[in-house]
Each structure stands twice: as C-alpha cells, then as structure tokens.
Length: 167
Image (cartoon, rainbow, N blue to C red; front, side, top):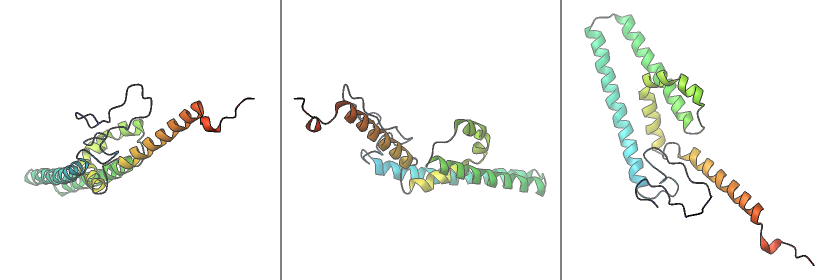
C-alpha cells in the first residue's frame, strides 16, 4: 500500500483493474483500512459543520436584505430560490452516489448546484453516516471489473487440469 495517497501498490507486470480513489478517502474504501473510520468521522463532522456555517452565512444574507428594506416579495423569492435549489442539489448529489451523473447534465446544472450548496453538503453528510460517499457505486464497478478481468484471464489461460490430452 502506498503511504502517500492510500492507493494499493500494483505489482510490476500486473494488468488487473485498480480501484478508483474517492475524494477524502483515496482507496481506503476497498478494505476499510488506513484510517477509513477516522476519515468517515471527519467527513461526517466536517460536512455537517460546513452546512451549519453555510446556513449561518445565508441567514446573514437574509438579514442584509431586511436591513436594505427590499420588501417582503424579494425576501420570499430569495428564500424560496435557496430552498428549491438546495432540494434539487440534494437530490442530484444523492443520485450521484448510486449512478454516474451525465457530464452534459452536470455542466448544465452547475449554477443550480452552486446556489443549492447546502443541499449537497447535507446529502454528503447523510451518506457519510453509512459509507464513504460514492463507495457503493465504486465497489460495484470495481467488483464487476475484477470479475471481467478474471473471466478474460481464465479464458486465455484456461484451467490446465480440464484440458484434454491429445493422443
């Protein structure tokens, strides 16, 4: 195991699949080693603390609108906009933990996700309570790649015990 990034060292000449690193976790999610539990706790606490601090900043922004006396309509529109964008960002982030997002759709939603950052932080917090965010998706893809690699390798080399001898 490489100490720098938590990526398993690949033996020279190995052609097998390698696990894809996750943000904050590297590849510690594969075997739940090298501080995986501590990282999960840190991610859980960090994402919740960041979401709480973000809500505090949004409250200051709302109070700024009240001080500026922009009117109730504008204040309500701003609150509804942040609530809707946060709900959409939560859903989009949550879905991203179970399936790969479409890059074109991701690019088109970039502004909405930026506005609804609190929803994304809360999705990250809730997912980190049970696993590293995205671990299930990466584990499925990694296991599938390993099985396909083993199947290809077995087909190429075959099992010598099962080969028929020519007479």
